Every structure is written in C-alpha cells, then in structure tokens.
Length: 496
Ligand SMILES: Cc1cc2nc3c(=O)[nH]c(=O)nc-3n(C[C@H](O)[C@H](O)[C@H](O)COP(=O)(O)OP(=O)(O)OC[C@H]3O[C@@H](n4cnc5c(N)ncnc54)[C@H](O)[C@@H]3O)c2cc1C
Figure (cartoon, rainbow, N blue to C red):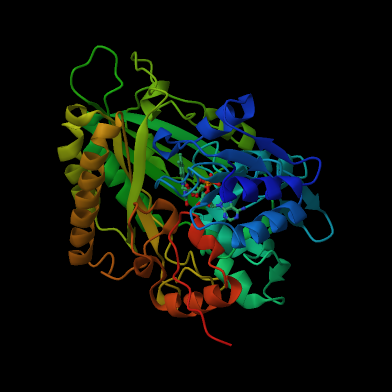
C-alpha cells in the first residue's frame, strides 16, 4: 500500500513543469547526483531526486511540503560543497537546483543575474567575455553560487569589496509558504537582509542579482615550499600583513598529507596563493614570498579560466602538483572544515596555529587521516567598510573579521568521531590562544560556511538571532524549513 509520503511525492511530481526531472533510485540521474558531493561524508540515499525547472515548480514543491507527513524530510543541493552532514543531502526528497544554471549580464544595469544552480567558475568565465567579474568564490573549482552567497562568501576580492553577499543587489526567493518574491534593499528589506548569511532558513533562492566589476586582468601565482622553509614563510606572511593592500589577497596553507606514495610518515609542505587585482602588483608587495626557495616554479596566471584550471580539483591535494610522486586522494574521502574568526594576526598566533596543527598532522595516518592544514588568510582592516546590513552580524565599528580555516580529510566512517572531536579541540585551542593574543573575542560570530556540525546558531547570529527568529516565524508558519538540515534559526510563532 502506498504511504502518504509516496502520495505527497506523487502530488509534487504531478504538479511539475514539463522540463523538470524526477530521478528515482537505480536510475543514472539518481546515481550521478546522489554521488556528486565534494565530501563523500555528505552522501545519503534519498527517496528520489527532483530537479525543478521553473520558479513555479519550486513554489509547488514547498507548498506541498507544508502539508506533508512529518517524517518527510528534504534537502536543497547546489554546488554540494558544504561539509556538515544532512545540510545538502537527505534520506527524504532531494531538490537538486542544477537546472537553474542561467547566467545573464545586463550591460545597462551592470548587474549579473545568476541561477542558484550555477557554479562560480562558470560565472567568471561567462563574465570575462563581457570584460566583467564578480566578488565571489575563488579558491577552488566546483563551489556553488547559492551556498557560498547564503553563508557569506570570502574570496580573493573580499579585502576590497567585503563578502560576496555584500555585493548582492536583489534576490528572487520562494518563501516557505510558496510565495515568490524579488527582494532588495528597497523591496522587503528585512527578507533581503535575512537571506544574506541566513543560510537555507528563509526559503529557496531562485535568482541572484549581483554587482559586477570591470575585469582588466589580475596577477595570480601559487608557490610551494618544503617543510624546512616554514619559518621563512611565516615571516613572509607577517611582512605582507604590514603592507595592508586592499587589492591583494594571500592565502597560505601548511599541509600534512599521507597521500605520498611510498612514504610512511605524513609529508609536510606549504602552499601560498598570491593574488592582486591588476596585472602587476606594486613592487615588493609579495617579495618575501618570492625570495624563498620554491619546490617547483609555476607560471603566473592572469585570467579566471587560467586560474580555475590551475587550482587543484576535488581529488588533488596541493602536493599533487609537485613533481615528487604524490598520489591523488581516494574518491570516497570524508572531511570537514572548521575555523576560528579573527580580527587580526600576531606572529605568535601564526606560529601557534601551525605548531598546534603539526602535532596532529604528524600522526595523521593513525586514524585514516589524508590531509590536514590551517589556512593563514589575513583580512584587510577595512574589508567591511562598505558592507550593508546582513543576517550574519559583523563586528561593531566596521572592524574586520575573517576566518582562519582548518581543513581535514580522512577515510572510513569509523574515523568520523575521532576527527570531529580532534577538530573541535584544535579549534578551541587556537581560539583560546587567539583570544589571549587579542586577535579575537570569545563571542566573535562563527562563519556559517566553515562551521562544524553541531555549532550553535547563537554562536553564528549573536544579537541578530532574536529578530531573525521572529521573521522566520512570520515567513514559515508551517515550519517547512525545519524539515531540512542547516544551522536552523528557531522560529518564533506569534498567534494572530
Ligand atoms: C573546496 C572548498 C573550498 C571552499 N572555499 C571557500 C572559500 O574560499 N570561501 C568561503 O567563504 N567558503 C569556502 N568554502 C565553503 C563554501 O562557501 C560552502 O561550502 C558553501 O555552502 C558551498 O556552496 P554550494 O552551493 O557548493 O553548497 P551546497 O552544499 O550545495 O549548499 C550549501 C547550503 O546551502 C543550501 N542551499 C543551496 N542552494 C540553495 C537555494 N537555492 N536556496 C536555499 N538554500 C540553498 C543547501 O541546502 C546547503 O545547506 C569552500 C568549500 C569547499 C569544499
């Protein structure tokens, strides 16, 4: 006998437009989509996968979910890169947004319209043809526009323009009640604000309208250094921080990896990416990095296409590009990001973060570990000078706030508990040291996109949580978004 879950799904399917797709288990589409996540730890086996094709499809799905049996969960998937489990995958109904991949540049408004199924690399490559670019994700191919923008979005141009969400001019969203709205600073400003950093709490986004900037070419160079140069690299980071150039960005990973063929101990090396928004950086800006002996000189890049092709793909560690017989990651790696939010660095904090990660990195192989690194990624003091209000609170007086991300990959679900506990401990230790150094405060809001499972929503939204809860109560009277995973803002329902 059919269950009411089956009947709900059937009803949803019956209401979809002809271009929409439905992939039940054991179909090619099902296998491909339910496996296409960055982290294999994200994967789940859904009851079936829906690919809506129109905004009306999305509205019909949410309307039907409002009256569905309680046990029917769902998940929304864009680029599939968020790490905590259950955020973009489900054992219920998976809503895959891939058909919303349209990108359109309007030369009159100089805004780009982007579907939430698009990946950032496609946006850059499309816009380059128009001599334009956006302030989006840059560090890795495959990151989706939707998840990145909904969580905030730190990229190569954040020092100059703030977060990706700060450069959004309007958003088309289907509210949990099925209502379709285009919101902006002028139209429904409360909802507009709530969507910027609010994750998947307020419905399903169906279109972004983002500011574009003139693209005149840039400077991008990646450098790799052996373990013996770690102290010099740390000094180079410190020298770079003193120069405070908003058009530049520098990220340095200190990586431990066990993918090295024939080696019994983890291989440690450092990887730095130098970015400048202009073909030629000011003389000396990156000098201290360029003076250190590199493992293998790599060519400088000046186009998005070139840079994206140059960045490691899903199964490559940064070591994969070195000529010393390093293997790719296994297909089914598991993993997480964690982070500490900072307002500034000290030399001591850089050294502490690297040394503390090294203690764990040196024993990586004991629990199936594959890769571990802290990413020293300093932010410019005035990065939020022009940032408009958002759900995610920024520090008062436009102070900077940027993550020190830590990434860990491992194999085997039996190792999940070990690594999740280890990452939590590592994060707490580095945060405690950073507080002692005056580089952050205990209550600095956590960054949605790089937070560990179980992070408290209070720790993300701080003083904004109350108003956001009230808004959620108004916009989601049936608690539809409670059926999906994410850092959930509790709704406050007011009786009318
Ligand atoms: C390799 C890698 C590099 C990264 N680099 C950076 C970086 O440089 N800077 C940074 O800030 N972050 C970075 N991140 C984190 C990244 O910003 C988040 O993982 C982001 O959520 C990815 O977006 P997505 O669309 O790929 O993810 P998905 O996993 O598809 O989606 C993320 C969340 O958004 C929800 N969602 C997706 N689409 C919609 C929609 N249309 N409406 C409502 N909700 C939706 C999903 O349900 C899910 O909860 C990186 C992650 C990885 C794995």
